[in-house]
Amino acid sequence: MVTKISPARDYLLFGVFAIAVLTMPVWLAPIGAGYPDLLQKFAIFGLFATGFNLLFGLTGYLSFGHAAFLGVGSYTAVWSFKLLGMNPIPAAILAVVTSGVFALAIGYVSLRRSGIYFSILTLAFAQMSYNLAYSVLTPITNGETGLRVLESDPRLFDSSANADGPLISNLFGIEMTGYAGFYFCAVVLLIGFFIAQRIFRSPFGIMLRAVKTNQNRMNYTGLNPRPYTLAAFVISGMYAGLAGALMCITDPLAGAERMQWTASGEVVLMTILGGAGTLLGPILGAALIKYFENIFSAFNEQTLHEAFSFLPDFLEYPVVSVAGLFVGEGWHLTLGVLFMLIVIFLPGGIMEGVSRIGRLFRRSSSKVEPSGATAPAE
Amino acid sequence: MDILRVEGVNKSFGGLRALNNVNFSVEEGTVQAIIGPNGAGKSTFLNCMIGRLAPDTGTVMFGDISLTGMKPYEINQVGVSRVFQTPEIFSELSLMENIMIPAMAKRDGSFALHAFKRLDQDAEVRDKALHMLEDVGLVEKRDEIAGSLSRGDKRRLELAMCLSQDPKLLLLDEPTAGMSRADTNNTIDLLKRIGDRGITKVVIEHDMHVVFSLAEKVTVLAQGAIIAEGKPEEIKGDPRVQEAYLGGAHL
Image (spheres, each protein chain N blue to C red):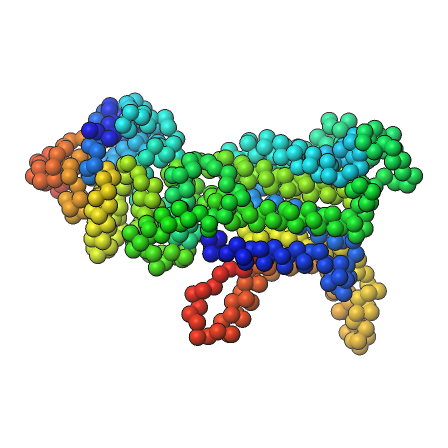
C-alpha cells in the first residue's frame, strides 16, 4: 500500500540504496564481483530493469521490445560522440530524447492493444528495428561492423584533444573506464532510482496501478487510460535509452545485436526474477543475472575439480561432471533452473522472499502485537 | 427540470431489436427506477446512456450536453457516475486508494501527469476519501486490499467511489443483485441516505422490494419498449405490467 509509506522511510531507503551501490566495489569483492566491468553492467542493467518495471510492474503491460530503445540509445550516444565530442553528458541527454521520441511512436501504435497483442506488437517493432539496423539503415548504424568513433570524425567540441590511443569517452578529462566509468553509471542509476521512487509514490503512479487492476472502472471513473499507459511507455523507453547510452559511454561501440529479442527477453527475466512492481526487485534481478552470466560462465572443469577436491575420487568425478553442466557454457541452465524455482515458489520474485523473511522475524520478535501491521518490503 | 432526456433511442443487434423508440426523462433530484423482465433491454438502455454502446438513432441529453458519441470517461467528467451489476473496483489496491483515484479524477480531469507529487501528502483527497469511507461504514478497513472484501462491502465501496465524485446523476445497475436480505436492506438505507444530497438516481432493479422502497417514479420496459410509467403504487396495479411480468404464467 503506497499510501502508508512515509517520506522519511523513503529517504532512508534511498540513502541505504545509494550507500550500497556506491560501496559495491568493496562489499562485492569477496564474491568475485568487485571489478569495474561487471559493476558497470550491474548499474546499467539495473537502470534498464528499473525503467522496464515502471511499465510492466505498474501498468502490467508486458513489452517484449524494450531492447529496441536500448539500441536507439546506444546509436544516439555514439553519434553524439562522433559529432559533438567524447563528453558523456550530451550523449546521455540526446539518447534519452531520441529513445523517448522513438518510444512515443511505437507506444502510440502498440498501446491500441493490450495483453498478448501488445507484447507481440512491441516484439515486432523491435525485430523490425533490429533488421533495419542491419540492412537499410546501414549508413546510420554501420551494419554488422557496428558503429564506432573514428579519429577522422568531426567531434566539434573536442577535436583539439587528439588522443593517441583508442577514443574513450571522458567527462571533462576524467576517462570513463574502470572505476570512474562505474561511478558515472552508478550516479545515473541513483538518479534513475530516485525518479522511479517518486513515480511509485505519486498520483501518477497510483493511476498506473489502476490501469493494471481495472481499466473498465478507470474509464467509468472519468480517467482516460491511454495517455497514462503511453506516458509510462515513453518514460520506460527513456530509461532504456539512457541505459543504452551508458553502455557506449563505458565502451564507445554500438551494434545491432543489442536490439535482438533475446535482449528484450533478458530484461523481462530480470524484472520477474527480482519482483515486478517493487522498487528494488528489478535491480536485484539484473545484478543476479549479470553475476551468473559472468561468474558461472567463467567456471571450468579445473575450478570444479578444485572445489570438490575434498571428495574421494570415485565421487569427485561424477559430481564434477554433473556440476559441469551448470557452469561455463551451461550457465543458462543454472539461470533457467533458478528462474523456474523462483516463479514456482516465489511468484513475487526475490522481493517476495525478502518480505516473507521479514514478516517471519517480525512475528517471532513481537508475538503480542496483532499481525495486521505488515507492510510489504519495497 | 429534467436532468436527463432520452429521445427516440433505437438499438438493434443484428436482427434483434433491443430498444424500440425509447423516450425517457429523469427529473432532477428524484429517484427513478427502470424495471422489466429478463431480456427487456434494461442493460442495453443503460449502456446507451453511459456511452458503452452507441444507439443507432436517437439522442441522450444530459442537461444541455449531448451524451451520444461521448467516451465513457468524458461522460463521467460531466457528472454521470455508474455502479455496475458486478462491482467494478480496483481489487489490487487498498480501500483508501480506491476512493482517492476517483476523487483525483474529479479534481484533476481525465489525465494529469503528477509524477513528482506525493500521493500521501494530498490532504484534500485523503480527507475526502476518509470521509466517504466513514459514510459507507468501511473506514475500519481502509488499508485492506479491496479484492478481499465481501460482495456487499465491495458494492458499498463502489458506491463510495462514485459518491466521492459528487455526481449529478448516479446510475445503479441492480445494486442489490446477489445480496442477502440484510445486506439489501443496508444498501437501501444507504441509498436513501445519499438521497439527501440531492443526487439524481436511476436504478435498474429486479427486486420489487427495492424498487418500491426507493423509487419515486417507475418505468417499465418490456421487449425494448416502455410499456408503463408512473408512481410505484400505480405501476403495482397496472394490468400491462402484470402481463409483462407474469405473461409466462398464462401459457
